Amino acid sequence: MELTIERLTKTYGKPRRRHGDGSVPEPALNGFTYRFVPGIYGLLGPNGAGKSTLMNIITRNLDQTSGDVLCDGEPIAALKERYRRRIGYMPQQQGMYDSFSLLRFLQYMAALKGMPAREADGQILLLLDRVNLASEARQRLGSFSGGMKQRALIAQALLGNPSLLLLDEPTAGLDPKERIRLRNLIAEVALEKIVILATHVVSDVEGIAKEVLFLKKGSLILSGSPAKLCADMRGGVSEITVQPGELPAVLRDRRVIGVAPPTDEGVSVRVLGSADEIGGGARPVAPQLEDVYLSLFGEETA
Image 1 (cartoon, rainbow, N blue to C red):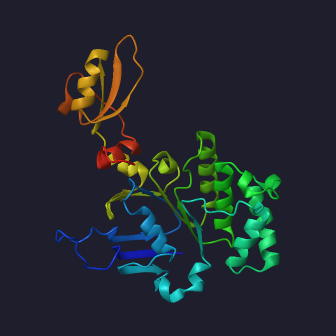
Image 2 (image 1 turned 90 degrees about the vertical axis):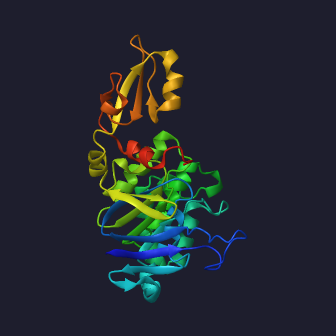
Image 3 (image 1 turned 120 degrees about the vertical axis):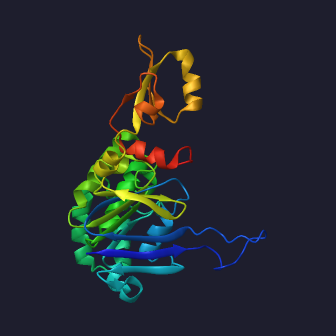
């Protein structure tokens, strides 16, 4: 499968309508263009960057203002159900039926996807094992923890063996153990699929993504493999050691990424900027994907 997005734009409200001050509303998506082939892709950006809008257009839950989304060269609007049968979607919000058992919920979602009951039942048994929920199949969803609900949503997204899997903030609200478990599950099911994972948590995609796309105010501002993105930033991250009393000034004057616990030598501070630029005994350190994120979005709320 190949998914091609060309000059995709979405403006909420009536196109060209102006505010009272004469300005035109900023688009939620602004000319987004990209080509996806099998592999895991991370969509990174703060709230309001356009991640959920893009996901909702790809799933046809929302119409674009302009531009095209093509599946194997054909517009998805023209493919209709042939396209819908090839996609699985895990929404950001856990809008589940708390009175349903997990088994009933998956059977219901399979029926909505048009799957024959016998085929659905066989797949459900396999998926329950894959998401480690077989023993909870007859429990009500209302009794599930957040992590269990997320795994249940992954299972429903995988019904029908989709070629395109879209996951919107799949680890939101999970503890570290559940977050790692879900990441590993995503990596496992991603073989031979296009997986698009929208998040603002860098660690969700750093170790599993084929490519990472950074969105800001509806525009694609940077993309590439995690290794390449970090390599391109080489020389742009440094570490300095300061005394505790000097730390407030460093936090005020520098773009600080992290502060280590104090030692006898002082406090190690990781900052954006080259060692030559910072001076004062600064040492270059290897960039991480989180450094790339912070260099692009700074103090913006995630």
